[in-house]
Image (cartoon, rainbow, N blue to C red; front, side):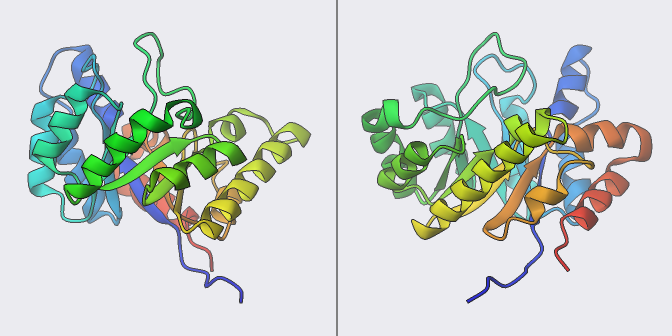
Amino acid sequence: MEKEKKDVRLAVNVDHFATLRQARRSTEPDPVLVALLAEQAGASGIVTHLRGDRRHIQERDLRLLREIIKTKLNLEMAATEEMKKIALKIKPDVVSLVPERPEELTTEGGLDVRRQEKQLFQFVQLLKKAGIRVSIFVDAIEDQINACCQLGVDLIEINTGRYAELKPGRARDKALEAIKLAASLAEELGLEVHAGHGLDYHNVKPIVAIPQIEELSIGFAIVARSAVVGIDRAVRDMIQLLKRN
């Protein structure tokens, strides 16, 4: 049976509004206010990454977001003891486990689930026991998708970074095909399928066309457009691109 063509949901990542704030150690722009405006513009969720170095989002932001977000709060974080304690205290709707290196500008690839299965299994089960849905940011690799299923996570976010950084052509087509295969496998394994990283207003449509993908997490492109047209227009423009009919 053909999968019903529902529009893809948009989860807006507000991290880089905080990056701008922290560049001047100021109070503006406030990512909490931006999150409210994004919700009003139609976003289905808010994503934020609390990093160990606190380079953008601060714990104050996370606490306030938990109080005010009416759709869904997705907390991206590394699988560390510090972050586990914070997640269990804040209780976001979703925790997305991601790799994290101090020297990186942004997350550079999916989590190597296969290599860390034992550690991650205990981490995932503790979060799920607390009533938090768990996602893993993962590359479009069959072994990694299978490992996510073995951990008992609720969903995965397929890394679209490789696809997004390539210009149209054979290499990008190959990267897109890998995402399609990963999404199909994940659905067969009973996982909810999300995707994100590097997506923008020009490259998102081929990802939207993948029927298994239910939600996209997009941040920097929306932040950049917001600087010109405002957050409301930037979010609404992206939502239009996520329609399937």
